[in-house]
Amino acid sequence: MLRRIHANVSPPQLLRTSMQFPTYRQARLNSTPSYQPPNPPQKAATPNSSEESDPRGSAAKPHRAFYSNFGKPLFKTFLMALFTYQVLYWGWLKLESIEMKRDKDAEVKSLEDEVKGLLKSKTEKS
Image 1 (cartoon, rainbow, N blue to C red):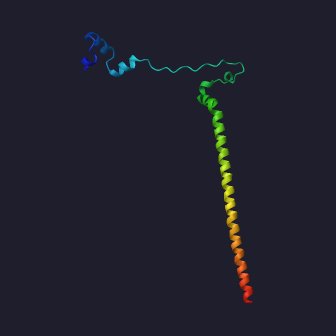
Image 2: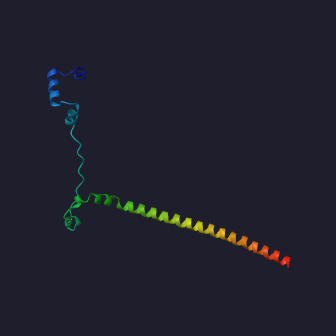
Image 3: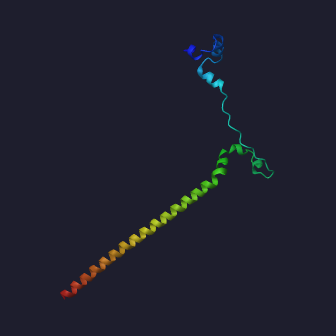
């Protein structure tokens, strides 16, 4: 199998490479450099900066960068969701109150008709 993979490599070269990298995993790890993420651009420090007054610095607060980038959109989304919920809740209550009023009006009308019928039957008997 090694002969098929390293057909164009002489045995001394094969021995050297196999001694350098005893296993495939070590060869893989040693052959490629590890990934290094790019450094973010540094902001110029201003004399009135609040970061200078903070002894821990901004590195101690990783959530600060998240909220500085996404704080306003998250706040706007929260307000829009709250407003939408309140409008739908108010609309539901309004429809429910209209339905309850219609049911009570229908009940009052039926009771009035029943009273009129009872009064009419009472006047016919006497």
